[in-house]
Length: 269
Image (cartoon, rainbow, N blue to C red; front, top):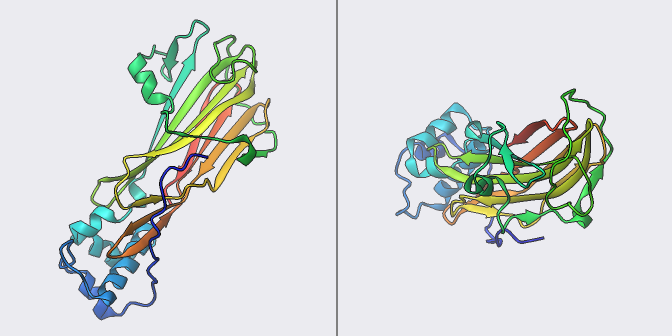
């Protein structure tokens, strides 16, 4: 397993009951990067950041964050998580087409395929779930050149599915992007084989601390009418002034069918 990011060893700030006086103090825009706020104020602000980033903040909490640009930049807004799906299908002559069936340029294909620093799924760490029987009903196609599993599987088509979950702050800035990649072979109404599967992070702010272990890495047994790949990570948002004020669990699930179609699910918290 490739380590995506070293741990920073931030201390977690305890929450607790916040008095009206303390909460009111956090509503003013006086907390700035240049200040060294009193410990009670930092703890109160960290508690608000934790609730808001988890999607459990009150209207007052959200107002406090939105009124302060410093806080709005680092508070995770669960409602603004964006999902983007990109796919590449490979023909037997080695050419590739996108999800719309149009040929892909080398540059466009490079954006869909996993980069060299993506973390490859390791067989010994994968949990294999039972065979699925859900049928999409779409027509399947025949021979297309495979990718990584070329030596193991003959025939069928190969597709790489790249899912990006973009996590944003209340200010709208990107906090991080979580990418998962699932390669599979399909044909004759069956998902015939899994190829390589990866995940990685990009566009990370300095506040992002990524755990170097996957919490979940599963794929269902094939061949089957449908199959599912899922990966999940742990991410903490930390700054010196407030400690680690938010813990997120980004995950992505890719369900694939023997017709070549895919269905995507995922979460930001």
